[in-house]
Amino acid sequence: MSTKSLSVPLPEGLERLSRRLSNRHITPYYYLLPTVIPLLLLTVYPLLRGIYLAFTQYNLYNKDTTLVGVFNFVELTTNDTLFWGALTNNIIWTVGIVAISYVLGLFTSIALNENIPLRGLFRGLALIPWVCPAVVAALAWRWIFDPHFGMLNYMLMEIGLIERNIGWLGDKNTALIATMIVAIWKLLPFSVVMLLAGLQTVPEELYEAAAIDGAGVLGRFRWVTLPLLNRVGKIAILLTTIWAFNHFDSVYVLTGGGPGDTTMLLSIMSYLNAFRFFKIGYASAVGVVMLILLLLPITLYTRQVLEDVE
Amino acid sequence: MELFIRRRLGRYVLAYTWLLIISTFTAFPFFWMLTSSFKARAEIFTRVPVLIPKAPTLANYNYVLTETPAGRYFLNSLYIATVTTLLALVLTTLGAYALSRFQFRMRRSLGVWLIAGQMFPGILMLIPLFVTLTRLNLINTYAGLIIVYTMAALPFSTWMLKGYFDTVPRELEDSAMIDGCSRLGAIRRVFLPVAAPGIAAVALFAFTIAWQEFMFALTMMKDQSKYPLSVGINFFVGIAGSVVWGNIMAMAVLIIVPGLIFFLFLQRYMISGLTAGAVKG
Image (cartoon, rainbow over all chains, first blue to last red; front, top):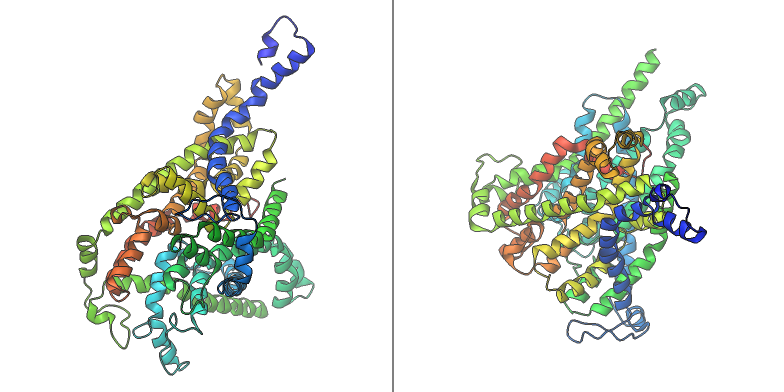
């Protein structure tokens, strides 16, 4: 704008500089400052700092930031009796939750996509766990899981599935499954919403066409629904994977990693190292291992979302 | 025709059966929290669980509100979540606008960071932030927690808003600018009112993050009087023991009520927030 109002033509170089500084080029950056500066300070910096700390033996007493190479990682993978168990738990936990919440979410969204009376009510009911903070979810379920007065044991006894009360969270055989149930409960609304949104983009004509071609209910599901859910389904799976893999709250409240480390997850292991034993550097190394394992899903997810936008 | 009806009927029966099963699973804990919170001790510890209290009592709420700092926790959470929401809106609106309207260098990298930014392990962010905030004397302060929650809400809020802004036609500001508005004036007078639903969805998202968060608050808040609800209820369970279920469930109900109210009235916005970026409009 400003260049045009000048009557004397500027030399070539100055002209270019002036154009550079003019509104058109600079405005976006002014607008972006309030977003980008906090973003740099509060997400980029901590991430880089966290990765750096993983290569030190920093704790809250020595405040020693000398780099010690991969010491923590060697220690973690060779000397820590918890690490491999926690990693295995994390993988079982994540895969189980993602698979089950996806399947439940798929059936639920298909049922909700039918044009049936009371559909809104059922949709609301399927989605409410989302408003429940993970801590509250954990406490409500702890009450349901209660070994002596809990609802779950009572119901299973009535149906005849079990003969004696099970201490769901205190028993090494059931604790991990019990924490997974809570996580699935909390995550289900997400799968339902995503898959339902995906289903609603499927045109009705496709089903009709498939039906005319002789496809039954299963055939239409296999050849129309599933392929069209491919994209949304992929995103839902990637997001739930990342969410489950990073999860901390409900397991910390339900079991704190016990009994006998059977529900120890990487995030809890890292938390305990950092804030109970104050081994900041070591705890960061656990975080970095998590980050490395998540790089693939994060990359795939980011690429998918960007692809859709452009 | 008859075949068609039979098939349709079969589908209905299947759908209803499944929805009944799944909504029992999702809704039962809410029902159980609610009824347990109105039960006296005698109806909590029964061999056969009591579904609906025969002698409903407000004793649990009375106890929780007068004998524990639950009211204080509630106000703490409300304050922290409200400031976080306002801050998130102020910080993201212009940035999201720029992302939606302008071409500039690093646009793509910024997009990548906004999407990936909140996928990183929370624990890996918590540790360095804890160290830094300790150095800045911001541990155990509302300000510290608000900063952290704003951080948590920022990337996705910006991305969500950008997505919504993309659906608002450019011509809107263009015509206002032809009529003599500056760009900022056009944004304020013409653009923002139209983009309000998107802003509401983001506000809801940021508020929910701050209201529900646990791990950061657990680590950062030392004074009991500064606990938000999530940490407060966990602390209460820790000292009272996980046996006073009536009291605990009354506190739980206090935490979920604001969320439930939002949910009843603003379900649509919540859903659009959840699916932002995942489903093309």
